[in-house]
Length: 452
Image 1 (tube, rainbow, N blue to C red):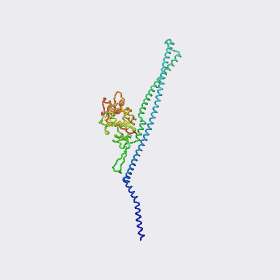
Image 2: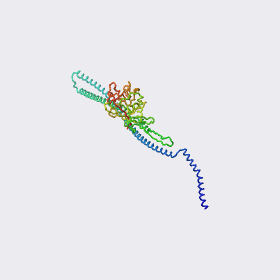
Image 3: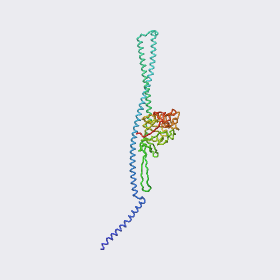
């Protein structure tokens, strides 16, 4: 009996000793947990926040991967375009060199013909002198002109001289015809040289393409964090928004949207889009005065929903980011509509007076009335940059434009409403190849978009 009671008592003692030994360790772990709670807060909330952050980063990574893929596609297209332009430059240079060689050869032949003609004229004069001498001899032999000459020797000599004189005259006539043809060929070649020079000026340079490549490599990405609470551990949402570079890149291709043409994050602006085209000028009712100062044309004026001018600064920013094409819609008061399209278009910066530095090949049914203005600087009523030495085209034709000396179109002229008298000729909204300078058009819309 005593042995049966001793066993449980010994077990309770053993259990007490175990609890006494484990108590410091448990207290230490409890205190460590309290310290972690005080230092880091509720770890379960932290784990939830970390999981939400991973999800946000995953979505952000997917969006950025899509952007990188788009950049690579644009880069390949621009590199292909640069290759094509290089081939065009080489081809034009070969044509230019070939025409110059032909001009040199024709000039050399022209000089040879001129020399031969001079020698021939001298020979003809010698033959005439010899003919006169023979006639004098015959006169003396015939008894001072008293009868016909019957000597065979003199007759043969006379026939030979007559034949030689006739053949010489024919040769001179042929040479004169060849000289005239050579002169015409030289004139045609000189015209071709001028055309090639104009074409080379309109080809975008490699520096222009490099700027476009840089714009593609550095697209404008905006990362915006929205906080939905101020408590520790509250979840935030991260949203990436990519502004389109043009109306063509936007999901909403018609209407007023915000664009970022050249990748400068702090300088986006609003434009009016029409089926992927960016509208840069619109006239339809005469409600906005376009006879404006340089500063107004620089910054733009009007309302994007109505009549407006986008502004030369913005137009340069858009067209310098990549190659654009230009489309012009024209309409008269009888409802007849025409279009003029140019496969490339760009203007310079303010230091270059926003010159029309690039104007490509024309197509359409309105006629080409803008080619005369290619390469010209922009002029306004208070700043004369035109080529008219005696006056100011902007003041004389009441508008702002890339005037030459002066114009074959004036789409920023006065809204005069159809037929105009001679004293208002050139002052209205006109396109010379469509209704002429004595007619002010009803509607005009100028639009650009990135070239294919």
